[in-house]
Image (cartoon, rainbow, N blue to C red; front, side):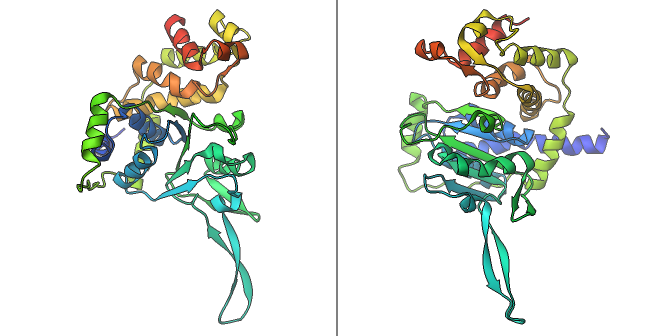
Length: 327
């Protein structure tokens, strides 16, 4: 990397703490969730956000898109939502000069840099599947024509862990398309006190635009250039393979898991570890990057058996055991 290019990248990376500070003007706490959403953006993937109502999931995503100077669209998923409500639809128009009629494609809310799919599990699989091509190919096909989506492109889907009656759980194939599965926790007592003080008056925070879409594209390119050692890649490979009951060295996995993560999990962990290094203004991966991100990357890619559910053993328990004991 040339000196001038390196200086440019360092200037961009130095803006990342400012970006988190801008988001922190509105969002109190939830630092881990904010970091993981930004990691997903830098790695060029999508994330699934789970938390009980009232934890500012929508506000968090909207604030981030404002600080990034990127277009933002929100789709509220409901049982009667149709694929065309997300992707778009054709309408019949008339050319006023010639009088000829033609179909014109009206782009849906998927055509934005940041798309918030709110309560994605409230809509049937047919509509959920409308996101699959967009997530994987970053384009949509309608009536045989392919339409490219904006770049950068990030889908953040939310789901509620309670009130599961009348919901449609995401199929495993679609879950695997999400780079990270982020779980939001309740704020601490002091953080909740700050929320009460800051959100019940007339004061409103102005969000400054820190990075542009072009800056994010350059940071995504930088992320792929971050150094990761062969030993670290080997550890990631062994960690992912150890989640599979057949041949796993862990009795914990054999006892509690039906099946484990596929190769996409290893790719995700390498990329996200690099992205976390960039977010922390480093140009090489450290073990902490891998250990921290193993949870949001693997938790939705490991299937627990009925016995584990009865004993309240989660995939996070399995991941923790593997990290602790895998040499």
